[in-house]
Amino acid sequence: MTSRTRLLGLQFFVVAPVCFLMFFFGLGSFGLVGADEPRYAQIAREMLARHDWIVPTLNGHPWLEKPVLLYWREMFSYSILGVHDWVARVPAAVHATVLVIVILFFMRRFRPGSELDAALITASCAAMIGFGRAASTDMILSVPFCMAMLAWWVWHETARKFWLGAFYLMLGVGALAKGPISPALAVLIVGAYAWLRRDRQIFWRSVWLPGFGIFFIVVLPWYVAVQIKVPEFFRVFFLQHNLERFSTNLYQHSQPFWYYIPVFVIAMLPWTVFTLPALGNALRRGWAIFRARREENVIDATPEDWLVQFLMLWILIPVIFFSISKSKLPGYILPAIPPAALLTATYLHRSKKVNRIMLMLHSLVCGTLLGAAMVVPWFMLKLHAPRSVWTAVAIVTGITAVSVLLAVRTRGIRMLHFVTLLPVVLGLVFLLRFAAIPERNAYPFHGSIIDLTQSARSVNTELNKLGAGSKPLAVFNVRREVEYGLNFYRDQPIPRYERDGVPAGDHVLVAKAGSAAAIQALAEPRKVTPLGNFEPQHLEFFEVSNSK
Image (cartoon, rainbow, N blue to C red; front, side):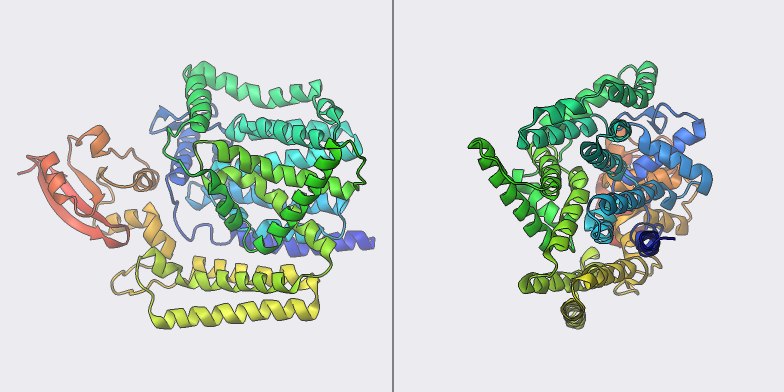
């Protein structure tokens, strides 16, 4: 066994537990949150129950908002591990882990010496952790797309057509995850890089007919099959959920043009202090190349310079593209986060040592992240933390910041990624396992604070305690998250008074707190009996019956 092979084994020994902690640890610590997680989990459950690999359905009706890849992954996970909420998150965790390993090998080949830094930075970015633990399409798109762009660079450097084929293959997988955005971004990034290099042939050599064949072999079978089975698919998916989503505020996700600047800053935590100067250096170098191109001067650029420029374009184009969009959500720019991690690792590898001010800021960020985790329970319950809590937060923040600073100052930059990982892991473990619920007498609930305040799993648990476990359920004036969450946890359609009217039979109603008078008016002349409330999510429960 060579020393290089032993080093790779040691790197795997480090990366594997980090990926486990970041993406797999505590996947079931809290229930499905938001509207998308339970909705996608339920769609996959219905497809598996029907043994239907073509048409996604929600409560028996076609759901054509997204392509099928996430549902396939979840169906596969369900078939092995059973239908559970945490199992719906396994595909994203697996995808994130695969990308970290691919990045390790990529940097080992093209920037040896920085591969472990790149892998650990990628795994520990806030956006990678968040979306790597979510039952959503964002990670399912981002990983094959990022693998496609890495494969394109390998082809660009080696001229081996195998990697160009892998580029088209992964773009096809990305198109099965979220539609045409995968090839669209790839065209923009490769085209911009060719323009910066003043070499159109870079772009045109990438246009490879066998590659198109590979792409369409991956994509067309499902797209054609679903169009045949559901003729409105083209209109609903391509026109409504792609073109109209981009050009209008049809889905109520409007944000200002600069929205993705703070999103990107937060997404790169805890590495933002190094990512921003790395991106700034790349932009300055890119501007120098642009000026030389405009003045027709020859500029001396190394292969490492060109990789940095490629990463810079790969970061900026998704951010700019989605900034133009009328509809904005944080996960849209997830494809820009892995190249930002690679750019950060390259910057640190080149630097050899860290600027003192930057190191102080980075240490403060690490301490603040761990301290912030301590006040999350109070924030989620919308309670004022007492002075003792803020004192503890200040102490933990200070000790963590000083520890990170001293470790890097005394042991050198090689310690940076390890001491940065420690507060990230501690903060994550605290939130998933040890976050105390303040005023437990007021909220006698044994579970995650996130579960208590954000997930319909805790609402369903409370309903079961009230003896409503087997009764039909309806909702009124609640967030979509509650409706879709109860849909998954009850495995039944959830009528909504505002949309579907009052169900004819006896049922239990989950409503926003303070809705009793409106419910009585809507349900008249039926009997409405209060059953209890769930204060952490501001909900009330009622039994609506036909008896007088």
